[in-house]
Length: 234
View 1 (tube, rainbow, N blue to C red):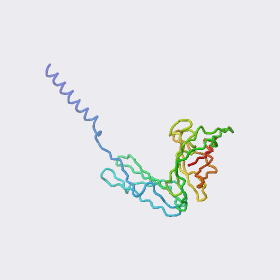
View 2: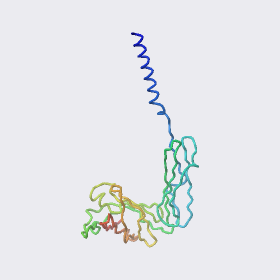
View 3: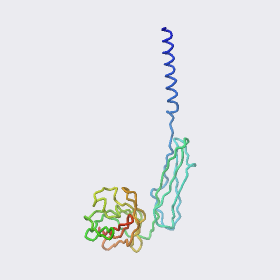
View 4: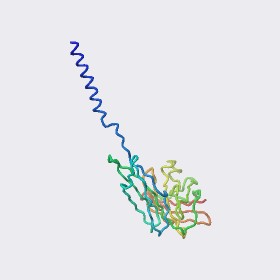
């Protein structure tokens, strides 16, 4: 009887070891995702009308240089002022993909006016209009404008702080974006995003900057039914 018990214990022990080996097989394999190192600048500034030459990347999968396998996609148009991107992607030996992106800003070097600064919304005249009803801003909210390239600026909120500060929804509800300042001091939007709702402005009308007074103003159409008239001063 003892021999039978010992035999069973030995069998169970061997079975348990075999089972462990099967369930852990392959789980210790290390996979290296492709890592990218961008050559050149990011963002990259390109004068309008010039030729854009992508400086490329160095791609490594562990210790192996796999730069030759990188796929590059670019929407850069050096003949048109704007914000563009170049994306780089590659899959590793196990089929897992990774990517990197470079921002490219095409600008007009002839525009030298600097509209950057800390602005205050004039709540006595700025308003939101919905279904014909016009409501003034609740306060003199703060908006920052930052120079990123000649004639190209980042703005902290195209809507003048209406949701971020006025409704106290927080920074995710500021309509961040970029605009270009033309030689005649008119303003045109380049991109915008209100992260909290994942949308952007519909259009801008009568955007302008007065270098004498330091005033920025525009009408922003938003969400198909609202118009924000924003006047702000340095």
